Amino acid sequence: MYKMFLKKLVILSVFCTSLAFASPAQELHHLLNPMHSFMAHFHQTTRNEKGQILQTSEGVVSLQKPKLFRWEIIEPEHRLLIADGKKVWDYDEELEQVTVQPLAAAFSKTPMMVLTGDVAKIEQDYEVTKREQLDDEKWFLLTPKHEATVQWLSMGFKNGHLIGLELLDQLGQLSSIVLKDGKMNKEIPGGHFSFIPPENVDVMDNIGEE
Image 1: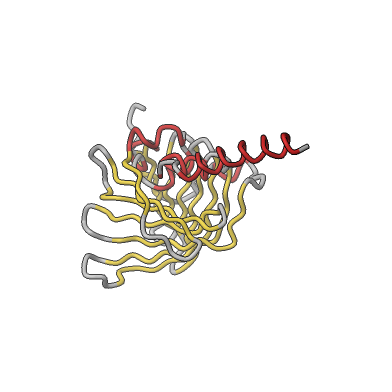
Image 2: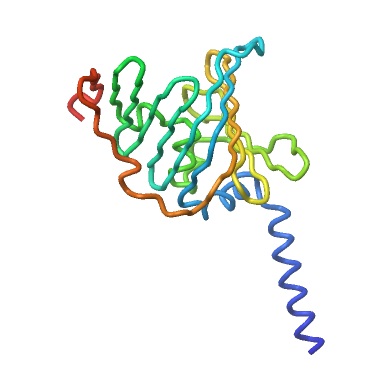
């Protein structure tokens, strides 16, 4: 009985030691790998390089691997972005306009692609470090290794759940996204990530021959 106890104690010690010395990239991988789908309400604030608020918005977001997401802004004006795995549909209801772009070209270096892509490839594209921790929150900083539309992006977790995103673009504008009521790995209907343009709207197709 005593030998069995010692064996379990050694195994537990090795496991805890391996976690303690895991790199930030490995720790982020550990948090993202189990997340196959995610839904939440969001509040986004965008500030300029001087810290002045340029825009705020609220809505709902849904993600599903591989490369499916739905970003629906409800306030102040309705707008809908849907990625169906190959294309991104951007529907601006107020302008009565839909823009279609290749997914990779539009969102290759964004939190959406990191969250819905292959987490094993994160280290190929980003240098992953840890930001200053807040209480029991964990924040990771992802800095692109190659040319990108963002200077960096960041992800925050609490108790293993995604709670926030931040990104700094090349113009110095900082977008902070607070996620609330997040639900992980809930079933999402397949049609949630498909889009058919409404009648009488302008469709700007930037796909070309692809």
